[in-house]
Image (cartoon, rainbow over all chains, first blue to last red; front, side, top):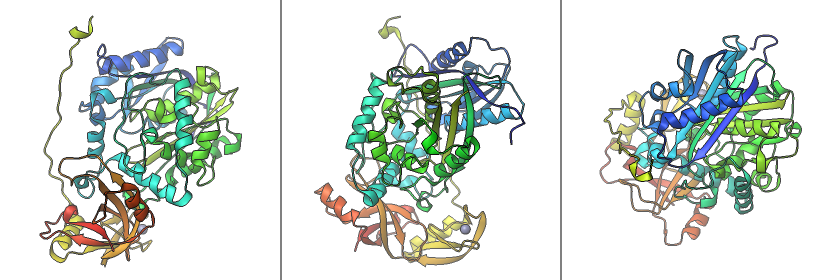
Length: 357
Length: 153
Ligand SMILES: [Zn+2]
């Protein structure tokens, strides 16, 4: 429960998608984006007493990676929390600190560098070592089974939605336009459904002092641990997270102007749109294909690396509300819903609603 | 600085672990090895039969108590076909599927064997009909998840 009269506002944002830049090591890569977010917020560190980071040791290839990387994210002489989950979760943790009156300004940052690690090998290590890992399971295989389950029920394929998504990513000035790579697609997924692995850093400055973008609602939820216990063609935890966020923001999907949905593949994004209530079951791909409000950033086709994607989706939403999105700007949006999902296979979900203040 | 002057340092991260499977998984694997059967445990609250067997139901946060065998037949829920080679796994194409074994309330993942994979689309159509499957054990089970796979009936 938030303190009375404490609202959370976005003061500055920054985002980088690039590929294998040998001129910067990981901490220099992080520093650039966090420094840009600080500059976007006016440049000063005054009043920032808290730093919340989303990072993953296996992705970074550095044990206790927060100790290596936190100073590059502004943690020197500040209270630092590292969230071993998606960047939208780190955003939520930062919000609770602000709402609790623990601080007045905070940095939130998330990153992952696909060019430094073997994304498929890391994916295999994420699974249960007793029951799942001996089978060689990867996250993309779960997405493949999710897509198959969805397609069997609803029919259709992703061709038109994939084309639209690629076009949106091409318009997005922040997208990865050079470099990156794709993993092998397992049936029924095809290459256009897959994420474009890139080097991604995202950073944001949050404050309790009014700015042009206000947090209106926030919700989080989790799926069962066992993937065989889940309903794969739906995203139950995301539905619950979005319901909580919309209840808090007192709005319905029809009253939201931008949807930035995080998902490993195009099908995960489509199922996400159904879960939040924008698209009816079976029509998520149609929404991605025909509704310009859905993932105007280009989603996973614009560049992807866990655990930064939820924060990327939030930043894309902020830029839309501020009218600063560039080539992929949608006309005058007032309210946006962004989501972030974690490994393994979207086990935890965060939904965030932002409004023009 | 020119590209050729920039240094890349190769790294590796390779440790050994010993994962304690715990009593429930140990009994589950022993049943695979000794009796070639798949066991589930029933939640004391929601009464679902959870497979593979486990000590607690995370939906109810309650312990499980009764042990029951499921299968050996079941219904395929969903699948994916993997066409890339992974060390230690059979040659691709590989079918990976979630199957709800008869009597179970949750799905179990494993490989599906015995399907003609020369035409992937044809195989996918067959799997898309959610065929009945049965568990098939290897000749000398070792008490591991790889002791069995599914085959179409
Ligand atoms: Zn239960």
